[in-house]
Structures are given as C-alpha cells and as structure tokens.
Amino acid sequence: MVYTNADRNPHPDYAQLAADIKDWARALGFQRIGIADTDLFLDERRLQDWLGAGCHGEMAYMAAHGTKRSRPAELVPGTLRVISASMGYFPASAASPRQVLADPALGYVSRYALGRDYHKVLRARLLQLAHFIAQASGSLGYRVFTDSAPVLERALAEKAGLGWMGKHTNLISREAGSWCFLGEIYTSLPLPLDAPESRHCGRCTRCIDACPTGAIVAPYRVDARRCVAYLTIELHGSMPLELRPLLGNRIFGCDDCQLICPWNRFARSTEEPDFLPRHGLDAPRLVQLMEWSETDFSARTEGSAIRRVGYERFLRNVAVALGNVARRDGAVSLALNRRMTHPSALVREHVQWALLRLSQIPAE
Image 1 (tube, one colour):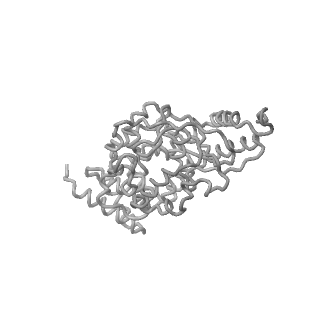
Image 2 (cartoon, helix red, strand yellow):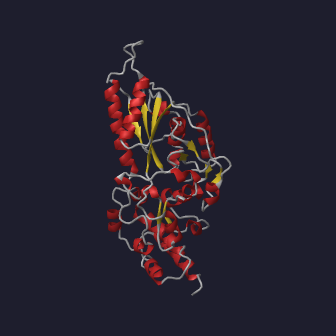
C-alpha cells in the first residue's frame, strides 16, 4: 500500500499508516500499541528528584546518561515520535504465586522471568514491526528498545495511552492489568498521537501496604534500595541485615504489589510459548537449588533473565531464603553447611547468616 494523501500528494497519509502499525503489532502478539511525542519534561524532573535522593542505590546506569533518558531526540537524533508496545506475560500454567509464597520450602521467582528472556522476544518482534513500517513508508529512521538503553519506557507508554502509572510505578491497563512487558520504536515519522489515559488508582493503597520491605515509600515513588527486585537482582554485594528476613522465600524479583492490585483481575494470561515456565522454576525447591553446581545453573537458566544475576548471587539469594524457613530442617541445614566452604566470601557470609537464623529456632 502507498500512503499518500490526495490533498497533499505526495506526503504520506500518516493516519492510515498509524492504523496499520497497530494492526501489524497485534498480529505480532502485542496487546496494546500507541504513539507518543517526546515531551517528558515533568517525568525528567521526577527522575532527577529520585536520583538526587539516592533511591537508585547502586544502579549507576540510571544517572549515567544525563538527559538522554528523558529526551529521546538526544539519545536518537531526529526522533519525533515513540511507538510504544506492550505484551502480556503472566503464565496461567505456572504454579500459583500465592501458594509458592506461602510455602517456605519453595523459592519464588518473579513471573516475568519464568520463560525466555523477554529482551530477546520483544526485540525480535519490534524489529519485525519496524521492518513493516520502513517498507510501507519508503524511508524510516528508527531504533528499537526493550529495556536495553536509557529510555523512560513507562512514562512513554503512559503518554501513548497504553495505561497509567500505578502507585507501585508499574504501568496498569484496564484490559491487561500490569503483567506486561514494554518495548519502543523511536522514529522520525510524524505519526498522529494517541491520547494518554488518566490514572485510575483512586484512594487504593493496596500495593503500598503489600510491599514486604516497605519499598514503596510514597504513591508513585519506590526506593530501590529497599525493593526485593533490587536486592535480589541489581545489588552485587551483601544484602542489608535488617532486610534479609523480609525477603521470605523470594529469590529473584518480587510480584507482591501486582498480585494485590485489583486491576489484575482483568489481566489475561499469556499464550506466548516463550513466556511459559522452564525447568520447574515456577515452584523450585530451595534445597535443590542450593545443591546446583555452576554447570547446573548455566544449563537451567540458559536463555533466561535469571542468568543476569550469575551463580554467586543466585546462591546468595537462595541462602537468604533458606534462612527464612522459620523451622528446623535437617535437609536445609545440610544443604547450607555444604556451602560453608564455597570459594565466594559473599556466598559464605549469607550461608553463615542463614545457619545462625536456623540455630535460633527452638527445636520442635
């Protein structure tokens, strides 16, 4: 199809192109698609305030790129619009999150990390979409992002009408809840804009109340230094002693604020095979995870987002979870003691903490 406007020939008919982009995106598996401009002035101020308060912890990359994160045209010169897309990931076939969290013998992995690494899945689909757009428009300057560069993806998705920012800072949609991945195409095409959606959290504070570590310090503000996802994924060193007992059996990320959100009653489970659980990681037994060799870890996290923490931090996380079982268990103590000679001081420290915790539990 040639996108021309009879009144202004040969200029492209951008309205028709935008409509087709949304059709192509849905055919590629995206649930929602929208188009935003690049004005993120208010979000830039909030980001600077958040960084100034040190809420990013050790995530130096959040402050490393100046204003490129909040000014798309500085990151990709010539950018006029951002095509924002979302893809749901909640796997109905996975073990019940609440049942896993309630069983101290199991480890909880955030639902987004149960299948194939979403970066690879979304990037491939977005590149396909960009190829379709380039073929149809004749020329297209663009770059594709999936949490892979300094991009304010949730702010852009909100501007593009995909949903609104919840008080837990995740994007929420009326139709899909918050269980979704986001990706973007920065483009030089002056496509028509979609209207942003207003926020619909009202006076609800369930996500704030449910946070196990009190990381949601105010509506729309998360102190990453207290967040389970930060502690189990981003933090490279020792976990703060006062926060370890609050992690429970969460070994990679946390979904508590999403599990409690009323809007997720309307979320649809994913039918994307790449997001379905692999290697039983939807309800793994902690003792077995503690016994994994580095070869086991590499094999069972191949193609998974879990691999980013590395074997050493993975054992650190599992050790903390085992220290929170809240009962004496010979198998747990044995698994921990076997790691007391691990070459990593980080692993030994958290194993020792877990053994001390278990020793303080009265015998049944």
